[in-house]
Amino acid sequence: MSARIPMLRIGSLLAGIDDLKKRRGDPPWSETVVMSDDVQAFLICHAPGHSNDTHYHLHDEWWIVFQGEIDWSIEGQAEPIRARAGDLVFGPKNLWHHIEPVGVEPTIRIAINARGEFHRYDRPGCKPLP
Image (tube, rainbow, N blue to C red; front, side):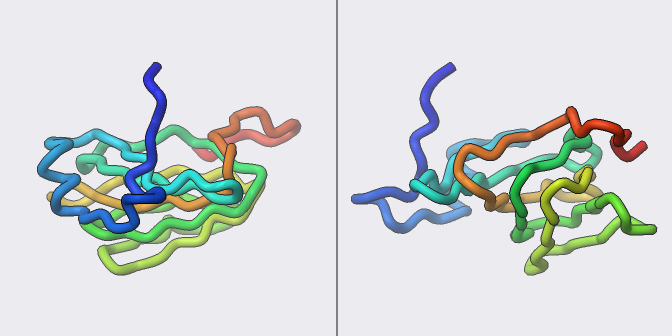
C-alpha cells in the first residue's frame, strides 16, 4: 500500500474540492486532507447506495457534508440523521454508526477525528446496528 500524503501540509496550505474532484473522478474515493500530530481528516466521496460498514471509534468523530445527502444511523438514535450539503454531524465515541449516501448525486464529506483512529468492530457485549 502506498503512503497517504496529506493534501494540506507545509508548502500546501490550500486545496480546492473542485480540483480534487476533477483529479479523482468518479466515486468511490478518499483523500487524506490533514495528518498532524493530533488530528486526521479525510475527504470522502461515495455514490448513492454505497454505504460503509457499521463500526465505532474510541474518540469522537465529526463530519461536514459538502455535497449530496447522507443518512447517519447512530446507536441510541431512533431514526437516521439526514444530513445535506452544509450540515455538520457529530459521532460520539464508542457508539456504533453506519453511513448511507442517499439521493441522486455523489456525496462528499470530510471526516475529522483523532490521529491514528480507525474503524473498530469488536466492542465487547454489544452488537452492531442492523
